[in-house]
Structures are given as structure tokens and as C-alpha cells.
Amino acid sequence: MDVTEAILKRRTIRRMKPDPVEKEKIEKVLEAGRRAPSWGNTQPWRFIVVQDKAKIEALAGAAGGQPQVADAPVVIVCCGVPDSFSRKMHREALKQLMDLGVMDWSDEVLDNVILGSEQFAPYHLGEQVMKIKAGEQIMIAAAYMTLEAVNQGLSTCWVGAIAPNEAHKVMNLPEDLFVHDFILLGYADEDPNPRPRKDFDKIMFWEEHQ
Image (cartoon, rainbow, N blue to C red):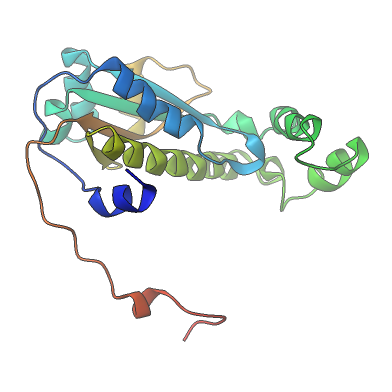
């Protein structure tokens, strides 16, 4: 299946079969997320696969009791690491790119220009901005995973309506992680029609907004 076909075929599926999902397929979905682009190679994501029914039900409680969460055979809890954008960790990630020849910078440029700039180094703007930037990268990875799920014959439902602090407690996570969203994964038990999309000429412009 090519990427365009996966994009057109993908649907949000809220009703999934109770059938277990093969580990190999779950790992391929996760690998797609691992391969997603991230700002400065920071990769500020952590993905926790949950299949234990009791824990899934607890996660459903952290999602306001949404039945599709409780009924999903697999819940991927997508977490972020704001410290990935700390000066130390961001520098380590960028140095990897420099060592590979991806970025042709000197250490002086890295330290004084890149990491010295609010535009390129979010740590200057504080913890809240670092958390927002981590969330942005997680969503890119989530999109990659939903498409690979289609390629594996699976379906997904992205769940953003959650109480992050409650989910954090359910998962017993360390303080340096935050819960961003859930991805429900399984075999579809429904075949919904494509969702309506705004007309192309309403959202796409050339050179300037009209």
C-alpha cells in the first residue's frame, strides 16, 4: 500500500473487534512513530502499549468514560518529555546530526547561534513552551502511526479528550513525563463513510491568503 492510498483509506474507528492485535503489527506501528521527523532530532516522545483490560478501563475513566477507549484491545499512551528541549538534551540531539554530517555547524555556531536563540531553542521560553513543542512532535508521530496502522490492516482512533493528570496516575509515570493523548488500535468493527472535508479552494492558497 502506498502512502496516498493509506491517507485516503484511513478512518477514525470507534468500534473495534475484541480480537487481540499481533505484537509484530503493533511494533511496526510504533516503528512508524519512531521514524517521524522531530525538531532538531529531539524525539521528545515515549509510547506505552497497554493491553491489560483493567488498566484500559482505568484509562477510559481518565478519558471521561469514553466507551471506545474501554473497548479497545490496545491503547497506546503517548507521552512527552519536555526536557528534550533543555539546553543539554537539545544540544546532544543536534550534535548527533552534526556528527552524521547532516548539519554543517561548528560548536561555536551550535552554542552561540542555535542554542543561543529563542527562535531555535525553546528552553529560553520556559517549561510551558517546551511542553507545547513536545506535544507538536508527538502529533507528527501519531499521524505516522495511524497511517502505518492502515498499512497493517488495523484501525485507530486518536483520543485527545483526556484528563492528563489522571492518566499520569493510572500509568504511574515519572514526573518528567506528561500524557499527551491516546491512540486506540485494533481491528475495525465498523465501516464508516469518509468524513466531510472543506473544499480545496477554501483552505489552500498560492503565495498569499485570499
